[in-house]
Length: 84
Image (cartoon, rainbow, N blue to C red):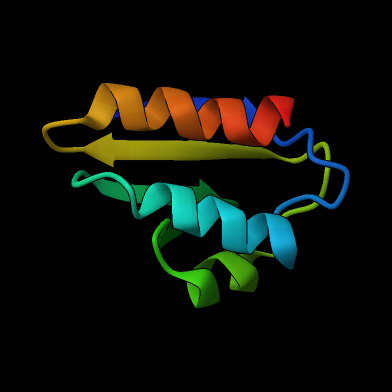
């Protein structure tokens, strides 16, 4: 299991279209992926879970991955929220 704290730099945060794109990206991996904010942990492959966190630009989240492609998944998802 690997985890990383990352700051969301997307203009719209992880809401609406970026949230859908994030979930689509997360579903490309076989690892179990989670996202944590303010003590609430959700499945990163769930659009409803992600939307429930209402993540805005500038907020810090923890991404957690566990599985055979955990390193690559974590790197790609961190890049998605911090650089796109």
